[in-house]
Amino acid sequence: MEEGSGAQTSTLGYEFAREEDARAAASDLDRRFTQNELAGLRIYRVRWNGNYLVEAAFSDGTPETRLKDASALLGESGTPVHPDDLADYKRATDEGAGLPDWLRRFFGA
Image (cartoon, rainbow, N blue to C red; front, top):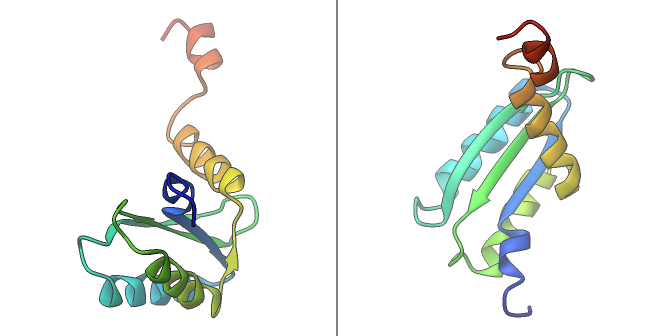
């Protein structure tokens, strides 16, 4: 692995058809990885298709072999999500929390 490429692979996203599968995978990650390795873990509900997305963020010092272990674990019942799609899911989730900016400006809020 090249130097500096760890930042690109330090966040993994996998999509699951059922909430139970997403929660089980996230729970497995939480049990198998230390707090120093697993920096963050989040489950999103994808509104437009009803699926669930597990996002696992790993610290910079996590070895590549451990990232591969995490991918294998998530891949047992999930489908990998491209990093760009993961960013879109997150953006859509954040935007869903309130009114769009243009609408707030329209009403003077």
